[in-house]
Amino acid sequence: MPSVCFYFEVHQPYRLKPYGALQVGRDHEYFDEKLNAEVLRKVANKCYLPANESMLRLIDRTDGRFRISYAVTGVAIEQMKLYAPEVLDSFVRLAETGAVEFVAETYYHSLAALYDKDEYREQIDLEMKLIRNEFGQTPRVFRNTEFIYNDEIGQFISDLGFEAMLIEGADDILDWRSPNFVYTVAGRDTKLLAKNYKLSDDIAFRFSNQAWGEYPLTADKFAGWVHGHSGAGDVINLFMDYETFGEHQWKETGIFDFLEHFPELLFTHPDWDILTPSQVIDRYPALGELPFHRTVSWADEARDISAWRGNAMQQRALAEIYALGAEIRRRNNSHLLALWRRLQTSDHFYYMATKSASDAEVHDYFSPYEGPYDAFIHYMNVMKDLNLSVLAPAQKQLRL
Image 1: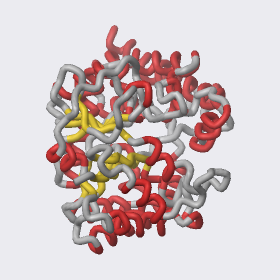
Image 2: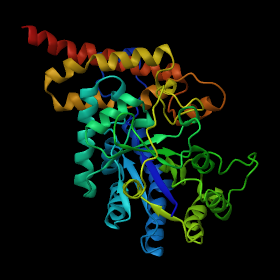
Image 3: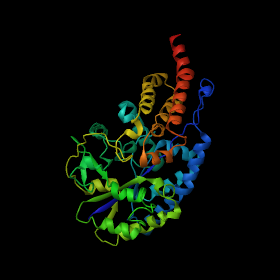
Image 4: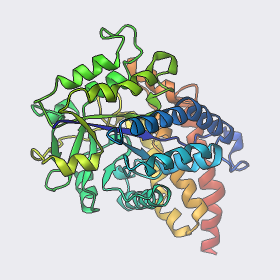
Protein backbone atom coordinates (compact mmCIF):
# COMPACT_ATOMS: atom_id res chain seq x y z
CA MET A 1 0.00 0.00 0.00
CA PRO A 2 1.65 3.31 -1.07
CA SER A 3 1.53 6.24 1.32
CA VAL A 4 1.73 10.01 1.64
CA CYS A 5 3.73 11.55 4.48
CA PHE A 6 3.04 15.17 5.49
CA TYR A 7 5.65 17.17 7.39
CA PHE A 8 5.37 20.85 8.31
CA GLU A 9 8.04 23.18 9.70
CA VAL A 10 6.94 25.70 12.36
CA HIS A 11 9.53 28.35 13.15
CA GLN A 12 9.72 32.02 14.09
CA PRO A 13 13.05 33.73 14.85
CA TYR A 14 13.78 36.49 17.31
CA ARG A 15 14.38 39.29 14.80
CA LEU A 16 16.95 41.96 15.65
CA LYS A 17 15.85 45.56 15.83
CA PRO A 18 17.66 48.12 13.67
CA TYR A 19 20.82 48.56 15.73
CA GLY A 20 23.10 51.43 14.77
CA ALA A 21 26.72 52.21 15.64
CA LEU A 22 25.66 54.87 18.16
CA GLN A 23 23.79 52.22 20.18
CA VAL A 24 26.93 50.18 20.76
CA GLY A 25 27.95 50.44 24.41
CA ARG A 26 24.59 51.96 25.41
CA ASP A 27 21.80 49.61 24.38
CA HIS A 28 22.04 45.94 25.32
CA GLU A 29 18.52 44.98 24.23
CA TYR A 30 18.99 43.58 20.76
CA PHE A 31 15.67 42.08 19.70
CA ASP A 32 12.64 43.83 18.23
CA GLU A 33 9.96 42.71 20.67
CA LYS A 34 7.25 44.78 19.01
CA LEU A 35 7.94 43.35 15.55
CA ASN A 36 8.32 39.80 16.83
CA ALA A 37 4.98 40.03 18.63
CA GLU A 38 3.28 41.50 15.55
CA VAL A 39 4.63 38.80 13.24
CA LEU A 40 3.76 35.96 15.59
CA ARG A 41 0.20 37.20 16.08
CA LYS A 42 -0.26 37.86 12.36
CA VAL A 43 0.94 34.39 11.39
CA ALA A 44 -1.11 32.88 14.22
CA ASN A 45 -4.31 34.43 12.86
CA LYS A 46 -3.57 33.77 9.19
CA CYS A 47 -1.96 30.33 9.47
CA TYR A 48 -1.42 28.54 12.78
CA LEU A 49 -4.91 28.81 14.26
CA PRO A 50 -7.01 28.20 11.12
CA ALA A 51 -4.64 25.53 9.82
CA ASN A 52 -4.65 23.70 13.15
CA GLU A 53 -8.44 23.79 13.19
CA SER A 54 -8.47 22.33 9.68
CA MET A 55 -6.09 19.58 10.74
CA LEU A 56 -8.25 18.74 13.76
CA ARG A 57 -11.36 18.55 11.58
CA LEU A 58 -9.62 16.31 9.06
CA ILE A 59 -8.36 13.96 11.76
CA ASP A 60 -11.86 13.74 13.24
CA ARG A 61 -13.61 13.39 9.89
CA THR A 62 -11.31 10.58 8.74
CA ASP A 63 -11.29 8.76 12.11
CA GLY A 64 -7.57 9.39 12.44
CA ARG A 65 -6.62 8.16 8.97
CA PHE A 66 -5.34 11.65 8.20
CA ARG A 67 -1.97 11.97 9.90
CA ILE A 68 0.62 14.74 9.98
CA SER A 69 3.98 15.62 11.49
CA TYR A 70 5.59 18.84 12.66
CA ALA A 71 8.88 20.21 13.85
CA VAL A 72 8.27 23.24 16.08
CA THR A 73 11.41 25.11 17.09
CA GLY A 74 12.05 26.09 20.67
CA VAL A 75 12.24 29.77 19.76
CA ALA A 76 8.82 29.51 18.09
CA ILE A 77 7.30 27.91 21.19
CA GLU A 78 8.89 30.57 23.42
CA GLN A 79 7.19 33.28 21.37
CA MET A 80 3.87 31.45 21.30
CA LYS A 81 3.92 31.47 25.09
CA LEU A 82 4.70 35.19 25.10
CA TYR A 83 2.42 36.48 22.37
CA ALA A 84 -0.20 33.85 21.41
CA PRO A 85 -0.54 31.04 23.97
CA GLU A 86 -3.71 29.83 22.25
CA VAL A 87 -1.52 28.66 19.36
CA LEU A 88 0.50 26.37 21.61
CA ASP A 89 -2.75 25.10 23.13
CA SER A 90 -3.99 24.16 19.66
CA PHE A 91 -0.79 22.20 18.95
CA VAL A 92 -1.25 20.37 22.24
CA ARG A 93 -4.77 19.43 21.13
CA LEU A 94 -3.30 18.06 17.91
CA ALA A 95 -0.78 16.01 19.88
CA GLU A 96 -3.62 14.53 21.94
CA THR A 97 -5.33 13.10 18.83
CA GLY A 98 -2.71 10.38 18.40
CA ALA A 99 -2.56 11.21 14.69
CA VAL A 100 0.24 13.80 14.94
CA GLU A 101 3.96 13.19 15.32
CA PHE A 102 6.45 15.79 16.49
CA VAL A 103 9.94 15.34 15.07
CA ALA A 104 13.06 16.88 16.57
CA GLU A 105 15.31 19.60 15.22
CA THR A 106 17.60 22.24 16.77
CA TYR A 107 15.93 24.31 19.48
CA TYR A 108 17.36 27.56 18.08
CA HIS A 109 17.07 26.63 14.38
CA SER A 110 20.81 27.14 14.13
CA LEU A 111 23.68 26.18 11.85
CA ALA A 112 25.58 24.55 14.71
CA ALA A 113 25.82 21.29 12.73
CA LEU A 114 28.34 23.03 10.48
CA TYR A 115 30.34 24.79 13.20
CA ASP A 116 30.13 23.31 16.70
CA LYS A 117 29.09 19.69 17.24
CA ASP A 118 28.94 20.04 21.04
CA GLU A 119 26.59 22.99 20.69
CA TYR A 120 24.62 21.07 18.07
CA ARG A 121 24.11 18.17 20.49
CA GLU A 122 23.03 20.50 23.30
CA GLN A 123 20.46 22.27 21.13
CA ILE A 124 19.02 18.91 20.05
CA ASP A 125 18.81 17.83 23.70
CA LEU A 126 16.98 21.05 24.57
CA GLU A 127 14.48 20.47 21.76
CA MET A 128 13.92 16.85 22.81
CA LYS A 129 13.13 17.92 26.38
CA LEU A 130 10.80 20.62 25.10
CA ILE A 131 8.82 18.21 22.91
CA ARG A 132 8.47 15.76 25.78
CA ASN A 133 7.31 18.50 28.15
CA GLU A 134 4.90 20.26 25.79
CA PHE A 135 3.54 17.41 23.67
CA GLY A 136 4.27 14.24 25.62
CA GLN A 137 6.30 12.63 22.83
CA THR A 138 9.88 11.41 22.52
CA PRO A 139 10.93 11.96 18.89
CA ARG A 140 12.30 9.05 16.90
CA VAL A 141 12.87 11.17 13.79
CA PHE A 142 15.10 14.21 13.26
CA ARG A 143 14.94 17.09 10.84
CA ASN A 144 17.99 19.34 10.69
CA THR A 145 17.72 23.11 10.36
CA GLU A 146 16.61 23.95 6.80
CA PHE A 147 17.11 20.30 5.80
CA ILE A 148 20.88 20.90 5.83
CA TYR A 149 22.41 17.48 5.37
CA ASN A 150 25.58 15.63 4.42
CA ASP A 151 26.95 12.20 5.33
CA GLU A 152 28.77 13.54 8.40
CA ILE A 153 25.59 15.12 9.78
CA GLY A 154 23.61 11.97 9.05
CA GLN A 155 26.13 9.80 10.87
CA PHE A 156 26.22 12.20 13.83
CA ILE A 157 22.42 12.10 14.17
CA SER A 158 22.43 8.33 13.77
CA ASP A 159 24.95 8.01 16.59
CA LEU A 160 22.62 10.06 18.82
CA GLY A 161 20.06 7.27 18.45
CA PHE A 162 17.55 8.72 15.99
CA GLU A 163 15.91 6.14 13.75
CA ALA A 164 15.35 8.40 10.74
CA MET A 165 16.02 11.83 9.23
CA LEU A 166 13.99 13.96 6.86
CA ILE A 167 16.05 15.32 3.96
CA GLU A 168 15.75 17.22 0.70
CA GLY A 169 15.36 15.04 -2.39
CA ALA A 170 17.93 16.88 -4.50
CA ASP A 171 18.15 15.55 -8.06
CA ASP A 172 21.94 15.37 -8.24
CA ILE A 173 22.06 13.36 -5.00
CA LEU A 174 19.29 10.96 -5.91
CA ASP A 175 20.68 10.59 -9.45
CA TRP A 176 18.77 7.62 -10.90
CA ARG A 177 16.90 7.01 -7.64
CA SER A 178 13.37 8.13 -6.81
CA PRO A 179 12.53 10.22 -3.72
CA ASN A 180 9.55 7.92 -3.24
CA PHE A 181 11.53 5.20 -1.49
CA VAL A 182 13.18 4.95 1.93
CA TYR A 183 17.00 5.00 2.06
CA THR A 184 19.65 4.87 4.79
CA VAL A 185 22.47 7.13 5.95
CA ALA A 186 25.80 6.18 4.42
CA GLY A 187 27.47 3.71 6.77
CA ARG A 188 24.51 3.55 9.16
CA ASP A 189 21.10 1.87 9.52
CA THR A 190 19.28 5.16 10.21
CA LYS A 191 16.62 5.68 7.55
CA LEU A 192 16.24 8.70 5.28
CA LEU A 193 12.93 10.10 4.02
CA ALA A 194 13.52 12.33 0.98
CA LYS A 195 11.21 15.20 0.14
CA ASN A 196 9.44 14.94 -3.19
CA TYR A 197 10.22 18.55 -3.95
CA LYS A 198 8.28 18.74 -7.19
CA LEU A 199 4.94 17.81 -5.63
CA SER A 200 5.72 19.64 -2.36
CA ASP A 201 6.60 22.86 -4.17
CA ASP A 202 3.46 22.64 -6.31
CA ILE A 203 1.61 23.38 -3.07
CA ALA A 204 4.15 25.51 -1.23
CA PHE A 205 5.30 27.80 -4.05
CA ARG A 206 3.22 27.39 -7.20
CA PHE A 207 -0.29 27.03 -5.78
CA SER A 208 -1.39 30.63 -6.44
CA ASN A 209 0.89 31.37 -9.40
CA GLN A 210 -1.48 32.21 -12.23
CA ALA A 211 1.38 32.06 -14.75
CA TRP A 212 1.96 28.39 -13.90
CA GLY A 213 0.76 26.03 -16.61
CA GLU A 214 -1.11 23.85 -14.10
CA TYR A 215 -2.93 26.73 -12.42
CA PRO A 216 -5.38 26.38 -10.73
CA LEU A 217 -4.24 23.46 -8.59
CA THR A 218 -7.36 21.71 -7.33
CA ALA A 219 -7.43 18.98 -4.72
CA ASP A 220 -8.86 16.61 -7.32
CA LYS A 221 -6.03 17.33 -9.78
CA PHE A 222 -3.36 16.91 -7.12
CA ALA A 223 -4.87 13.65 -5.85
CA GLY A 224 -4.74 12.41 -9.44
CA TRP A 225 -1.05 13.27 -9.68
CA VAL A 226 -0.35 11.38 -6.46
CA HIS A 227 -2.41 8.38 -7.58
CA GLY A 228 -0.36 8.40 -10.78
CA HIS A 229 2.66 7.30 -8.72
CA SER A 230 1.02 3.97 -7.84
CA GLY A 231 3.57 1.23 -8.41
CA ALA A 232 6.42 3.75 -8.66
CA GLY A 233 7.49 3.95 -5.01
CA ASP A 234 6.44 3.41 -1.42
CA VAL A 235 5.87 6.91 -0.04
CA ILE A 236 5.45 10.45 -1.34
CA ASN A 237 6.92 12.87 1.17
CA LEU A 238 5.22 16.26 1.11
CA PHE A 239 7.44 18.50 3.24
CA MET A 240 6.92 22.28 3.52
CA ASP A 241 6.72 25.31 5.79
CA TYR A 242 3.48 25.34 7.75
CA GLU A 243 3.07 29.01 6.81
CA THR A 244 2.21 27.73 3.32
CA PHE A 245 -1.36 27.64 4.62
CA GLY A 246 -2.69 31.16 4.98
CA GLU A 247 0.54 33.15 5.08
CA HIS A 248 2.55 32.32 1.93
CA GLN A 249 -0.61 31.19 0.15
CA TRP A 250 -3.41 33.43 1.42
CA LYS A 251 -6.82 32.10 2.36
CA GLU A 252 -8.27 33.83 -0.70
CA THR A 253 -6.24 31.54 -2.99
CA GLY A 254 -8.31 28.56 -1.86
CA ILE A 255 -5.43 26.87 -0.03
CA PHE A 256 -7.59 25.89 2.96
CA ASP A 257 -10.26 24.40 0.70
CA PHE A 258 -7.51 22.42 -1.01
CA LEU A 259 -6.27 21.18 2.36
CA GLU A 260 -9.75 20.19 3.53
CA HIS A 261 -10.54 18.15 0.39
CA PHE A 262 -7.26 16.52 -0.66
CA PRO A 263 -7.06 13.74 1.97
CA GLU A 264 -10.53 12.39 1.28
CA LEU A 265 -9.89 12.47 -2.46
CA LEU A 266 -6.64 10.58 -1.86
CA PHE A 267 -8.56 7.94 0.07
CA THR A 268 -10.91 7.33 -2.87
CA HIS A 269 -8.12 5.09 -4.16
CA PRO A 270 -8.22 2.18 -1.68
CA ASP A 271 -4.49 1.44 -1.99
CA TRP A 272 -3.38 4.80 -0.58
CA ASP A 273 -3.04 5.97 3.03
CA ILE A 274 -1.34 8.76 5.00
CA LEU A 275 1.38 7.98 7.55
CA THR A 276 3.61 9.85 9.97
CA PRO A 277 7.39 9.55 9.49
CA SER A 278 7.69 6.93 12.24
CA GLN A 279 4.93 4.87 10.65
CA VAL A 280 6.73 5.12 7.30
CA ILE A 281 9.98 3.72 8.67
CA ASP A 282 8.12 0.99 10.55
CA ARG A 283 6.33 -0.15 7.40
CA TYR A 284 8.80 0.28 4.54
CA PRO A 285 12.28 -1.28 4.28
CA ALA A 286 15.14 0.83 2.99
CA LEU A 287 16.10 0.42 -0.64
CA GLY A 288 19.78 1.02 0.14
CA GLU A 289 22.28 3.68 1.22
CA LEU A 290 22.02 7.23 -0.09
CA PRO A 291 25.52 8.79 -0.08
CA PHE A 292 25.90 12.57 -0.40
CA HIS A 293 28.75 14.14 -2.36
CA ARG A 294 27.92 17.65 -1.11
CA THR A 295 25.99 19.49 1.60
CA VAL A 296 22.34 19.94 0.69
CA SER A 297 19.45 22.05 2.01
CA TRP A 298 15.90 22.75 0.90
CA ALA A 299 16.59 26.44 0.15
CA ASP A 300 16.81 28.20 -3.21
CA GLU A 301 17.17 26.63 -6.63
CA ALA A 302 20.67 25.32 -5.89
CA ARG A 303 19.51 23.44 -2.77
CA ASP A 304 22.85 24.11 -1.11
CA ILE A 305 23.96 26.22 1.87
CA SER A 306 24.71 29.42 -0.02
CA ALA A 307 21.49 30.91 1.38
CA TRP A 308 23.30 31.27 4.74
CA ARG A 309 27.00 31.43 3.97
CA GLY A 310 27.29 32.22 0.29
CA ASN A 311 28.95 35.62 0.66
CA ALA A 312 31.70 37.24 2.74
CA MET A 313 29.25 39.03 5.04
CA GLN A 314 27.54 35.81 6.05
CA GLN A 315 30.81 33.97 6.49
CA ARG A 316 32.23 36.71 8.73
CA ALA A 317 29.10 36.93 10.87
CA LEU A 318 28.98 33.16 11.32
CA ALA A 319 32.67 32.96 12.17
CA GLU A 320 32.28 35.65 14.83
CA ILE A 321 29.23 34.19 16.57
CA TYR A 322 30.65 30.68 16.79
CA ALA A 323 34.08 31.95 17.88
CA LEU A 324 32.42 33.11 21.10
CA GLY A 325 31.33 29.62 22.11
CA ALA A 326 34.15 28.75 24.51
CA GLU A 327 33.98 32.11 26.29
CA ILE A 328 30.19 31.99 26.59
CA ARG A 329 30.31 28.53 28.15
CA ARG A 330 33.04 29.61 30.60
CA ARG A 331 30.75 32.35 31.88
CA ASN A 332 28.18 29.77 33.06
CA ASN A 333 25.42 32.38 32.69
CA SER A 334 22.10 31.01 31.45
CA HIS A 335 20.84 34.40 30.22
CA LEU A 336 24.01 35.03 28.22
CA LEU A 337 23.94 31.49 26.82
CA ALA A 338 20.35 31.92 25.61
CA LEU A 339 21.25 35.29 24.06
CA TRP A 340 24.21 33.77 22.21
CA ARG A 341 22.02 30.96 20.95
CA ARG A 342 19.30 33.30 19.71
CA LEU A 343 21.99 35.05 17.69
CA GLN A 344 22.84 31.70 16.06
CA THR A 345 19.39 31.36 14.49
CA SER A 346 19.85 30.78 10.77
CA ASP A 347 17.42 33.54 9.75
CA HIS A 348 19.92 36.25 10.70
CA PHE A 349 22.32 35.00 8.03
CA TYR A 350 19.57 34.26 5.53
CA TYR A 351 18.67 37.97 5.60
CA MET A 352 22.27 38.78 4.54
CA ALA A 353 22.08 36.73 1.33
CA THR A 354 22.85 38.52 -1.93
CA LYS A 355 20.91 36.35 -4.33
CA SER A 356 19.48 37.12 -7.74
CA ALA A 357 16.24 36.46 -9.62
CA SER A 358 13.62 34.27 -7.94
CA ASP A 359 15.90 33.37 -5.02
CA ALA A 360 16.26 37.06 -4.13
CA GLU A 361 12.48 37.50 -4.11
CA VAL A 362 12.10 34.75 -1.51
CA HIS A 363 14.88 36.18 0.70
CA ASP A 364 13.38 39.68 0.46
CA TYR A 365 9.93 38.35 1.37
CA PHE A 366 11.18 37.02 4.71
CA SER A 367 13.59 39.81 5.63
CA PRO A 368 12.49 42.60 7.98
CA TYR A 369 15.30 44.84 6.67
CA GLU A 370 15.70 46.99 3.58
CA GLY A 371 18.42 44.75 2.21
CA PRO A 372 21.20 42.28 3.02
CA TYR A 373 23.73 44.99 3.86
CA ASP A 374 21.42 46.48 6.49
CA ALA A 375 20.94 43.03 7.99
CA PHE A 376 24.71 42.59 8.17
CA ILE A 377 25.35 46.02 9.69
CA HIS A 378 22.71 45.58 12.40
CA TYR A 379 24.01 42.11 13.25
CA MET A 380 27.67 43.15 13.42
CA ASN A 381 26.83 46.17 15.58
CA VAL A 382 25.10 43.81 17.99
CA MET A 383 28.16 41.57 17.94
CA LYS A 384 30.37 44.56 18.69
CA ASP A 385 28.25 45.53 21.68
CA LEU A 386 28.19 41.95 22.91
CA ASN A 387 31.98 41.80 22.80
CA LEU A 388 32.70 45.27 24.18
CA SER A 389 29.95 45.74 26.74
CA VAL A 390 29.13 42.23 27.91
CA LEU A 391 32.07 39.91 27.39
CA ALA A 392 35.03 42.30 27.69
CA PRO A 393 34.17 43.59 31.21
CA ALA A 394 33.68 40.02 32.40
CA GLN A 395 37.02 38.94 30.95
CA LYS A 396 38.68 41.88 32.69
CA GLN A 397 37.10 40.87 36.00
CA LEU A 398 38.29 37.30 35.53
CA ARG A 399 41.86 38.53 35.02
CA LEU A 400 41.62 40.56 38.21
